[in-house]
Image: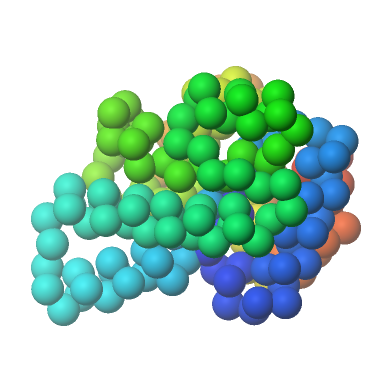
Length: 184
């Protein structure tokens, strides 16, 4: 599942979504792939004032995702920071909820274009495919639920046969259902 960084705009909503994730993780094996949110927005702001090469902006934004991963892992009951497939498997076997800090894995694989057309949406799609997930749940800011809220590259990064569901953070019941396998 991808927990969009925009969910941080409302701290109480962020906490409520984490509680739903923790509850769903008692019944399902979940991997949390963070968005970039305010951490990636900082890179965008710097780039507006001081143009950066696409490569630099790409890797800096992924490092922003790492920062959000640390925040989620410390706030999510049962959450543990992981950085690759073997740690994901170990966390799941240990009954924990892996929260991916993707920089090392993404840097080694380098599977996506270095462009603002690629955000954590496409990263989550690629990672979901790499770990053999059957479903990707994208949690977006409150009020959002349309499929066009994903980045411009998302549908190219999404592997064939992988179901993707977009749910707004203020729809806790739909998040729970999506994480448990319902809601198409």
